[in-house]
Image (tube, rainbow, N blue to C red; front, side):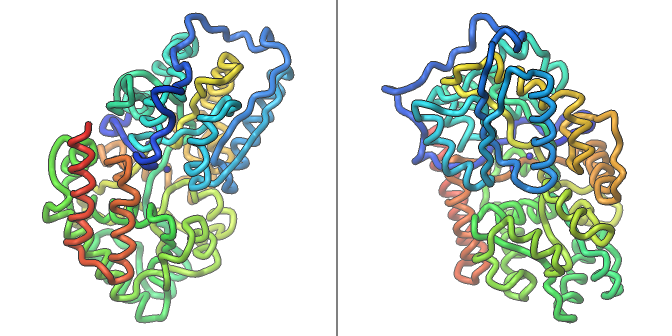
Length: 451
């Protein structure tokens, strides 16, 4: 996710990549739709006449849903000639259905197309998305956003490289993958929020000893284990090594620190630190169960914060993952939320571009804060909820220390299955750390040879 965020420069956040399946590469050379940027654009929405704009999004959780509903309402109030036909799906369902929708005869106008080789690059390769550079000249998105953020939504011709090339989307929110914790449970255990991985291990053992679920975890979709692995990997490996590995510029998944990270996950599973039968629990059910009291800690993205704050009030806290040593800077995965893109078959690309401009405007950043989300850019409004303040402070610390690393599912188009599947087996006790990392490297090598 699905995503850097907001405040300030995100230098290190250069090109992140993401997940689908190369075998499902959309389209073919015989049916590629037109994907050239329009020669001329119009920013006058009123001149378009009465328009129904079909928008597909994955903003289904509480705070995200409130955010997009409010922005859609304001957009339609500003442009009464436009009616938004909103189709919302969960992240997983959107990934499963978007390819077919884009290849059909009547695709949506605007979609949230995930970054990376597996989704956006494949859609660009098939000619299914419209390059936005002409609209950028009209609206100035690249002037509004740091280069590191627009690079994340850029792809070269033919979908060969991500992180450069033409712009294919603009994001509204930012994301940090960090550590939520139940303040009430920690207090009962007599434990302070852990500052180092050693302290975290001690906290897990203490929670297990008191018959608490140490880590709330659901992993049906495989991607959650990859995010958890990535957080642990950032704790044992150098952030530059992680970046180079994901971006394909050096390193191996079978390098010592990467195997060590997998071994730690395997050890946690053997010690019973995860929710029972974690591989049978849906990702989106994890924060719901955590809010009900299942788990002392929850690794997850800031996209869960609005719902957790609403349900748990001041009982939930957020922190960056522990540091290797006390006082050392920490690193963790992060990125922008799914970018809003225009489909190449849209009958109303000018209106679609105006919509994207509106929902990523300074006004939209304020709405993001008001609904408990993390805006991609600095907002005029400041958060007032304790959890939101903690997340904002965490983002500031990451920005200061250049601590963002890419989502590892960006590494290849098939990495979610090729690595996520073996990680499920590791958590179930059926594969070793060495076997899991070899599977990751095999998939990685195969993709690098084809690039």
